[in-house]
Structures are given as structure tokens and as C-alpha cells.
Image (cartoon, rainbow, N blue to C red; front, side, top):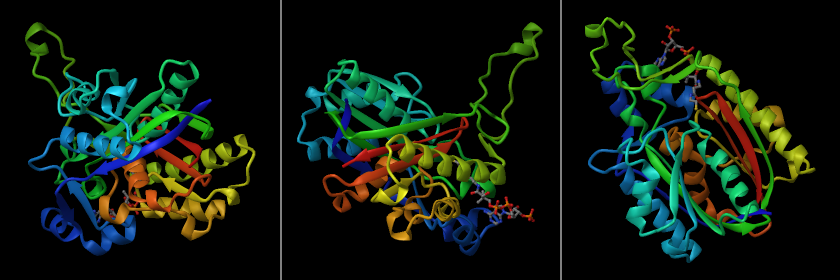
Length: 320
Ligand code: COA
């Protein structure tokens, strides 16, 4: 026994930063960004908070599911960081939507949503919950250096949510962790504890919040998508051609296209919104689920596939 999805929701910032605006901030161009990534615009939080997007996405999902917040048994938020470290994000979502269940955050980089599905599935199997809300919410513009053209063009802010109930619609799950900080890192802000004054010399001085070796990450991503999709299909004992839609993590259109070609998947089965929203890390897949919900018919097979920092990745095959 695992779960079925009862409702989905998403929310994006009011302000969309386009490539023309970015090219006035750093030495780049619409042509370079579009041809290398497929991204045209991305949402940036300005006067709103991440909590506002999270609550809007959660309420949409609850409304679609026709579920009241006080009937939830658990809330899981996936995020690199909410508006504050403490209270953690899920606690503030719980308060804001009027729920009274327990709630916790998970940080698995861009892979958070798919990992949260596995945690939810384990809760259902152990009879610890009947209804779970997952909210994946990311404020990447908070970490980016808008002088660094190699990273600031890629990411956007956003939130996506799903309401799950006990059910039979998880067909298979394949998760991957390959711990490695040499190709992708998001470092923390240095504190100001005066170590040196006490004779220590340990203070980490981070000069760049988001650092990556783009080409290495690209190779990891393509391999991760291909391997985890193949493994998830094999585990469910189905052929990749039997899958109706693929919702791959939206990091770079070229990554998705390279994996699509390797796997021999028809173009119209790949869903994407990267052109408008950029890479919204763990919010990427639930944002797409909500955006494309009208396409999904009961019984269709959907493959949700992710990769990202950690390094991490994985695929979940679900029946709608
Ligand atoms: N605008 C213009 N030029 C840029 C640029 C930008 N925004 N960013 C980098 N460049 C330049 C580089 O400086 C380099 O110039 P050089 O040849 O004079 O040294 C050139 O473009 C090529 O850079 P490179 O890094 O080789 O480009 P790329 O084809 O690998 O594309 C990425 C860069 C980041 C788009 C690509 O590697 C990628 O998407 N990687 C995966 C990143 C990712 O998905 N991260 C998140 C994981 S969840």
C-alpha cells in the first residue's frame, strides 16, 4: 500500500525576471541563455515571502482534493531553506493553513519532492497517516549572486503542493544518493563568531553561495535521469513506452532532451515549463503536476524524475 494523489497546487512569484533584464545585470544574452538552457523567464520573490507561495500552493491542492487542513495527519515541506531557519518552514505552513498535525522539513536539494513521496509512502505503509500534504517551496534567488552569470540565469523561486491519501498508485520508486561536494555546492552564510579572537582559525568564509561545475553536473544529470527512469520502469515490470507522461526535473532543456533521446521517448510525452519558470529546485515537479493536471486521466502512468545537489536523484512511477 502506498498513496494516491488527491489534489495538486502551485504558486509563482508576481515578478518574472526575463533574459533581457538579466542581460542588463550580467554579461549574457537572451540568445545564449535560451540556446544553452531553454529558459526565458524565472520568478523572483520581491515583496512576498516563501510562506505566501507555500500557503497558496497548499490551499489550491487542499481545495482540489476537497480536504480540510484539519484532517491532515502530516505535513512535509521540502526546501533548501524557508523564510527562517527556526521556525522551520513546515511549522509555519501548518500554522498558516490551519492544520494541527505534526510537520517537518526535508532538504534533499532538487530531489526533495521525490524523496518526500517515499517518506509519505512509508508513513502510509506503517499506518502512521491517512492524509499527507507535501509542499515543495524554494527561494533560490536568496542564495544567488547576480554578478555570477554561470548560475544566476538558471534558477527561479516557486512552490508546488500535493495532497496524498493512502492508496495503491505508487508503482515503483528508485532513489539515488552519491555524496559529493566537488561539482555542486550551496554554502551557508558565514556567521560572525570571533573564532580568531580565541586563537581558533576555523571560520569558514564563503565567497559564493551557489557554486557548480556546470558540465560535470550536466553529465551527472543525464546519467541520473536515464538510469533511474530505466530502473523505475524495470521495478514496475513495464516498458518505458507504456508510460504516458514524463515529468523530469526542470534544470536545463538540453539535459532533458539528451535523456529523452537516450531513452527513445517520444517528444510529446515529455512535459516541461522550464521556459517560463527556470529551475525551481525541489518545487519543480509539483509545480508541473499542478500546471498539467488537466492532461492526466485516471489510470495514466506518470514518471516523476529528478536529480540535483547532494548529489542526489531518483524516479517515482505513479498511476493517476
Ligand atoms: N552568458 C554568456 N556566456 C556564459 C554564461 C552566460 N550566462 N555562462 C557561462 N558563459 C560562458 C562561459 O564563461 C564560457 O566562456 P569561455 O568559453 O570563454 O570560457 C562559455 O560560456 C561556455 O561555458 P560552459 O560552462 O562550458 O557552458 P555550457 O554549455 O556547459 O553551459 C550550463 C553551462 C550551466 C548552462 C550547463 O553546463 C548546465 O546546464 N549544467 C547543468 C547545471 C544544472 O542543471 N544545475 C542544477 C542542477 S539541479
